[in-house]
Length: 208
Image (cartoon, rainbow, N blue to C red; front, side):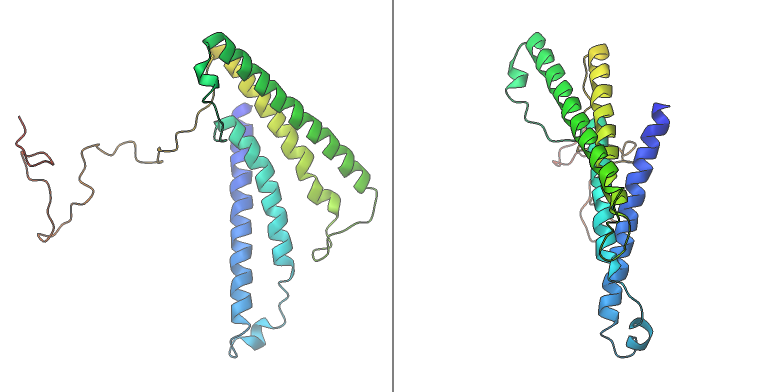
């Protein structure tokens, strides 16, 4: 069940990011294409005023779910210089307290956001350009916050069970695991560029 939620979270973030990128790209093409006399008759009647507003809303949803993804994968920036200098017992205590504080904070934000969405849902307030109901826009706050609260509790349960926290390796590149460490990245298929000679290391000394 958790794997399904993980994949759904990742696919949702990817789709929101892709949609925002495509809409922005289309809006830019439309803006510059409308200034071309040959294209103006075809583009003048197309209204793209809604593009910026929709892009903002998509990024809001993406940011809320992306924050929850960051908690799960350990990608959020943290200052742990002082914490790592403590003893293992005190360090574990502070980690538990910080995770509980994060869960409490996001749970409170989610509850306040849910109450706000419920209140604004009983009004006729809509967005300026899309004329979409604003409760649908603000729904990102409780959904993303509650998911982030769940991720804090999930990380806490994993830490109490294993004593380890999720850690993101910023140096890891997907698909590069099988590349040999001694590969010559600058080698080319012509004879005009220097390369490592057989039987020699990169400093020019012969291998034993």
